[in-house]
Length: 454
Image 1 (cartoon, rainbow, N blue to C red):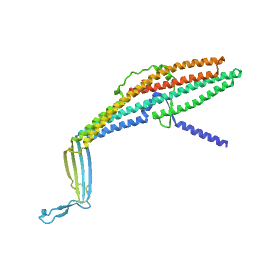
Image 2: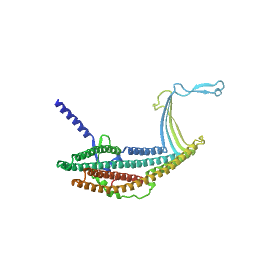
Image 3: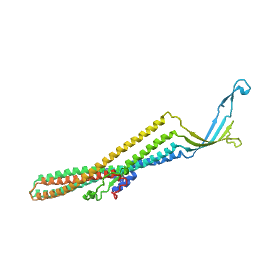
Image 4: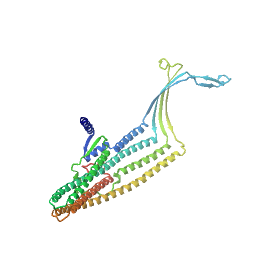
């Protein structure tokens, strides 16, 4: 029985170790995650594929204006020959006669050439797909901005969680040291056992908080894994080397020049291209009133047999040669073209109205982000002062408790006050960094974002 258990345990251990080996681990810092996401983010990949699709659409439309060559083979087997009515007057009088003409087997082989010579509709259609392709390119840019914006925000959220974990562990270490002092005092009859119990309760609460924070780190890491486009069977480990430097108070000195350059924003570039597209759509519908002119030619061989012997070289083939120019001139379309032109003009007005709305919204987002940024910078500076003050209060309470002129409760309150001040600083700092990201986005500075360039 014992042997079976040992074998089962070894088997499970082997399976678990194989699973860990199969799961590839990637340790990345923020810059590496940005680089990885630019290649693998799902939304960015989709935008790039749409851009490639737009490039093929240009080739497709351009091909309509190039020479068109096609060949055709048509074989007919007349099970019953067609009947022709011959007027009796052609036969010297009398009744009309029904006669069957032709041979049973017929084959036509032809090659046809056509070349568009002039078409305003084609010219405008080609310009339209080029503009549409440019829009796809801007959508790639927009997808990249959105990806960087989301990744940075989630990354800073993760750093805040790590910082909170550090604060909790520091508090646990401080309580452990205090508990040793109190236990010594209890043994010497200089403190009550309830003092040690109070520390145990606080320590246990911190342990529970640590478990919650640890779980939050795993959830947040998985969020980052999805954003950068990492496969489910791969594991992401975020490099947190020296992450504490992120919360250095020296980072609170950055300032932003006020004002927006709307022409530098992807959202406005997209709408400007949409307006160009609207104008081309109007011209395309107006071009429906103009003629299309095309050159065409055809060369056809015709074989007529009473037997299926088309591969007999001694039999004759008859050929037909045609060349011509065709002009298609629209005269009346039931007013449908006028309706299409008006509809295209309305589309342009909708885009113009949308542009005004977006510009107002972008200005509002920028103003809010700037106000939020400046507010959190001030709050961070206040919290830094509070942390220094709370450290001094805790030190004094520690000294006073050791001298027997203060209670343990006062020390625990000072410990909690310090922890709250540190956590408040972290929250304000991360809010400041996220407002900074919003400012960079609103000013069009996220498209080529890198850590070295931040």
